[in-house]
Each structure stands twice: as C-alpha cells, then as structure tokens.
Amino acid sequence: MSDQPITFYRLQACPFCERVTRALQELGLEYRSRFVEPLHSERDVVKRLSGKRTVPAIVDENTGVTMSESANIVDYLQRTYGSGGDA
Image (cartoon, rainbow, N blue to C red):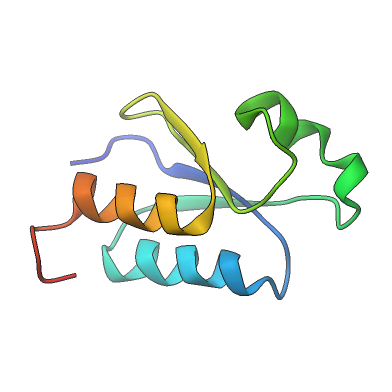
C-alpha cells in the first residue's frame, strides 16, 4: 500500500499529535517522527512544508499530500489507508 513512510511533524506531549499517532498505529502505517521546536516562532521547517507553524503536520510522499490540523490528518489517513468504516 505505502512505499514511503509518512513524515510526521510533532511535539512531545501534544494531545493533538497523540491523536495522529494513534491513527497511524491503528492503521499499521509506517511513519517517521520529526520533533519540532517547542517555540511556535521557530518552526520554520513546518512553515516551509505546510504554510503554517502548527503541529501536527504530515507529509505523505505516496500521495503528494502535505497537511496540518489533527482532525484533517486523521480523516485523511482513514479515507486513504483505512478499510472503509471499521477504523
């Protein structure tokens, strides 16, 4: 299904990031965590990728999708990699 692991930009102890982590694990997806700067103003890597400095953010090389916002990411992962309605 997926050739490249999803790159997951996150913070330690971030509840929104944990929500995405759970979705990735439940779907059995390979991913690489990239922990970002705690200071919002220093998250230039995330800003270059998604246009925002917010985390979580993912880059899915398999589909060319880059996105942020945990609810959107979880929805995307389930639609793209889930088996329909049993996630």
